[in-house]
Length: 212
Image (tube, rainbow, N blue to C red; front, side):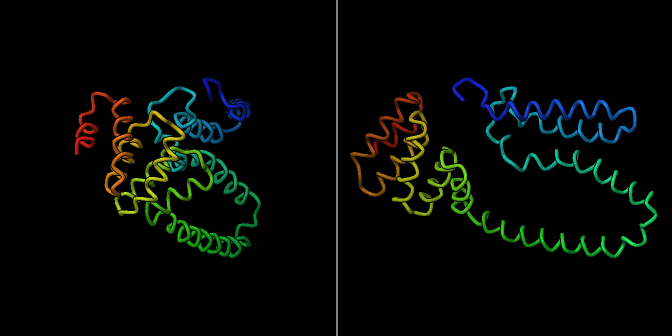
């Protein structure tokens, strides 16, 4: 933030160092833990953005799913070995199956509920804004959805919010100008297209939009 690392990332870095230490110390007894932790850190490293990567999509939470296999792997192996050594494997079969079906039911219901979030761009980005109210991409994408579905007043409101977050965002100025134009607010449309032209003066699209 403003050229400085957010304070909370410091704690994550400390935790990461401790995890690496645990992995290194465990190599003498078993390589399972080291493999799992190593897999987790390697896969999740690009998403930490410690090294600048020119892609906002790496921040999507779905890219962390694969990394968590590295945490689950040693836990499953350890649990399996402890069960085998305990001698109670036969007694745990029924509770294990009961737990399996309960968890399956819980996850199926959670998936069903989450499908409602992905029902449309409106529901998806509305949920994002519920938890992250200052995300430009969420306002911009939801505004485009509203515009495509001819909900121009809602689109203008979201484009305006996006512009308030980043006044140099070309798409928000240009697309809000389009929404103004469609709704007959021609002076506002011309103003927005002019602002968009200042940001990207070599973009012919904005001049065409302003011309019509």
